[in-house]
Length: 169
Image 1 (cartoon, rainbow, N blue to C red):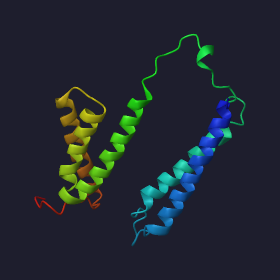
Image 2 (tube, rainbow, N blue to C red; image 1 turned 180 degrees about the horizontal axis):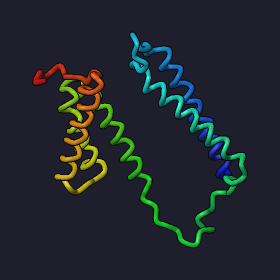
Image 3 (cartoon, one colour; image 1 turned 135 degrees about the vertical axis):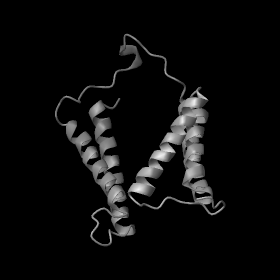
Image 4 (tube, one colour; image 1 turned 180 degrees about the vertical axis):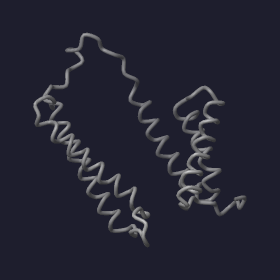
């Protein structure tokens, strides 16, 4: 059985490799800021890639401190064994989120941000996470949509898709 430090080293290494590939891809494909603005279209993706790399290195380096050297206990070693949800439920959630993100990307281009976003949030909350309160999920969807619209479209003057099928806005 692998120790927790070995698992952390492998995971940290994989995350660091993803961070390097992501950062390289951002620098290679996204144009830098034009004009006096410091934060252009590649600013946030670049910061996220660098942050992932730093955190991955922190995970790897923390394994050498000696505190993370504990072995993962077997179920027989635990006094209280908690019932785990079946793996099929986790797989269903992951696949559902992936399908939702692909559909959201497609429909955001077709119907625009202001229509696709609240629909995607409601589907995620009620369809995938099984939130029972429709009122709360609709309010959250509208709040997130309006908040993102105000921050990105109005305040930062960033492009949010308007849609090609409908032209309301």
